Length: 517
Ligand code: KIV
Ligand code: ZN
Figure 1 (tube, rainbow, N blue to C red):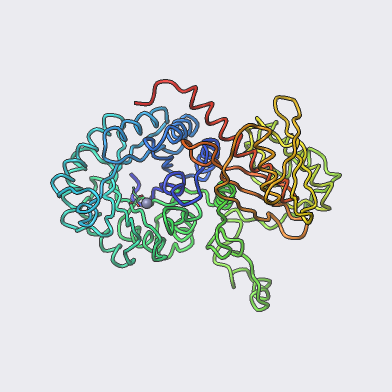
Figure 2 (cartoon, helix red, strand yellow):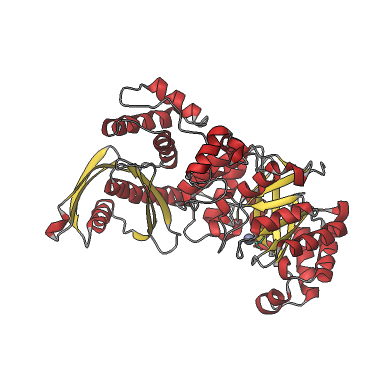
């Protein structure tokens, strides 16, 4: 094992998905997993297999498709959780089971109602059982940030002897200060020696997660658990982009330490995660925020013109942020120029069907806008790849004059090569659209969340609508994506996209046979 290599363990698809409003469907998770592989992530925590049949399905499909990153599933220290994880990751080229139990006095007393001996017994059994499925077992001492060091050493000794290869020390509630966390990691990394890799997993409740991750690395941690855009439970997790770029940019402080991340894929990955979840990073977010490389004041602009290094410690292109290219596409641009452009934008896995469908949408857009920007094109491609399920497709939408007080929507939908039409009134325009779609499709969606963002600037910006819609009581809400220069058209598309996603998931799960135990 290379002592200077920092293993990057990405938990966007598990802890990140636990952010409110961030649930993703299977196809979206697969897209993100493939992008994380391209980014060079060492371990992808693809979910929590026992949580639901949908989670199990997503993990096993990711396991089948990702080749270079190890695929991991989370499990409580409970046999059935571990079994589901073992089965879900079984087809992966490289796989890992991650199991955990809390070790802090407060969690043991109130949550687990277990004493120390019982916790150790359960932890050892969990690791031994996980080892019957895989050789690579990670054990987490949940709430390590508030656990007592002598007890943590006992647990570590026991689980390492039982076969754990990585020991993760989560600061579950984001409580520790960097100097404290660094000292804890040093003591436990020295204690573990060569017997296991020490990992950290820091939450951001005090805004210190990345500082804590870096303090841990400086004190012997060789795995960092991170998420793209810092997504995660409550205030989130340590952001992959921040930790990785700090290690790369501050070589003077981190010496020979390095990660295997291809940093030019950071921005494309961030955009994909933001698009899929509908959660945009704050504008001034380090590395991936809209303003991260924008220079507003005259003094700064002057400095930048003389020498970039006056105000930039990283080059935007090192993280995959490229200045708008000079090759602007318009309505006379052909398919070849369009293909060139998307390749230049880094989309190298676009199928011919996706390219053709995106090109058609580009032509429609170019008819309405003089210049189609790189961001517009990025969104067209991403939208097409996120909307592969096309059971129902919007054909046309007409909205009545809302000032009349009777908001009405007339909708035409393509279903099995037939066009169905209907109209309904609603409490507002959106309500009228959704009611008409419900009538046409026979499903009764309940809108749980609705977000609209503009993809580019200007009055002719593309509107991106993200919906979360629930269609029955048993399934989670489904995310839908719609893109159009017209917000209401984007809204109707996003609602149908959520329905398509629900239907394809339902169909897949009903076809599944024997894995559930
Ligand atoms: O925050 C936490 O403690 C976790 C563990 C399950 C690793 O997410
Ligand atoms: Zn966590």
